[in-house]
Image (cartoon, rainbow, N blue to C red; front, side):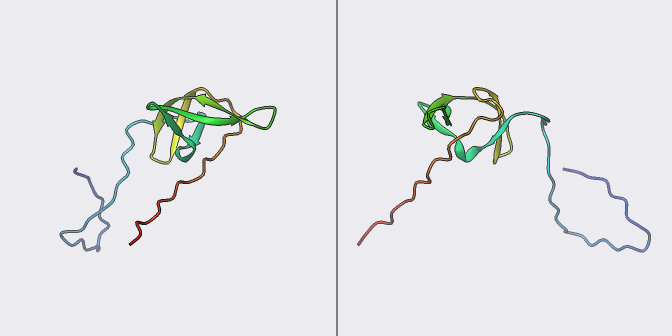
Length: 97
């Protein structure tokens, strides 16, 4: 990667510095999105559990769009206002002995 810099007069820049950059390949604004931790998978297909009128949860498959690694766009399968269940984290038990 190459970048252009504007160095103010009187400033000194040393060699071998490093930098961080955020590269945005695509962007969507004003979309329905959820945290990826609520996703579950059945045969490789993503789904979430959505609360119904009886206060129970129904399995609902979703179509996903762009993700930033934490939040993912929901293209189909959810509506704004749906209450999504956060699954319990599975904890690993260390081997005994």
